[in-house]
Amino acid sequence: MRQRAGNLGQALAWSGRGRGLDVTVVASRFATRAKLDRIRALDARLELVDGDHEMARERAAAIARYDGIRLVEDSLDIETCEGAATIGLELVDTAPSFDAVLIALGGEALATGVGHAVKALAPEVEVICVQPLGAPALTHSWRQRRVVTTDSTNTIADGVAGRRPIPAVLDDLLLVADDAVLVQEASIITGMRMLLYHAGLVVEPSAALGIAAILEDRDRFAGRHVVTIVCGSNVDVDAYHRWVGAAPIHRP
Ligand SMILES: Cc1ncc(COP(=O)(O)O)c(C=O)c1O
Image (cartoon, rainbow, N blue to C red; front, top):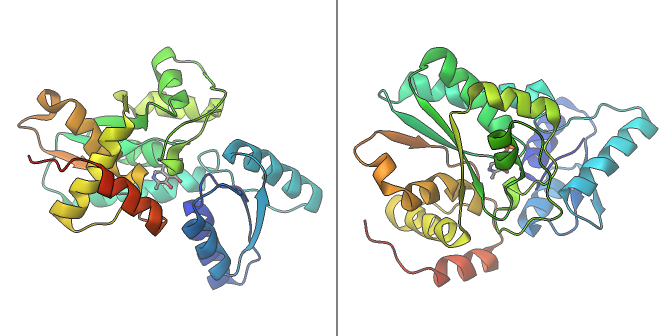
């Protein structure tokens, strides 16, 4: 199987262990250490590549071809979108009606899954995807309605740091996203800090993208009921302290 930064890898390792299935996770050796350690702790075989997530993706495809095993491609395999869609179902079921949902955008399984569920059940809700300025490939692709790639990424939000969108995936995203916005690293850090101080949540950078988007465009969201998905908390403790300790405290 293949995964971006380690969260899907953990999910598959956990699921495989429960079902007695062998899972191989292919990841970048530069991935967040906490994610790699947790994948190992869940008994998956972990293969590290000396490159970024896109190279891990290629290597996973090669292993699957060679060994004749099932390849799970984040965002391309419909199951990865369906899993995320359950969050959309929960949102529509449990939250009082809301006006907009802000969703971290990486490969797009999360945005497409949640977006489809929300658009099917609450079509008036605005579905807004959020990416870091340092990893903008899918946002540019959404805006230009064609696949746009980048040579590199430069963001602390490793969970969403892709540079080569999958064409079929973009088609799905175009159906459900109303907007895609880019945010600065400083806003992501401020968002992480706000989630710690105001909600008592330790989150990884990708999970603060929605808050970052609100901070960067307060007028757009003022007076509206906005939902965001806090989608991960796998951080290396040292990096977390460095980031969260470095941002000026934000007072609403
Ligand atoms: C923490 C976190 N947030 C958001 C995402 C968004 O994922 P995607 O757009 O690839 O579904 C991921 C994907 O792995 C993630 O790990």
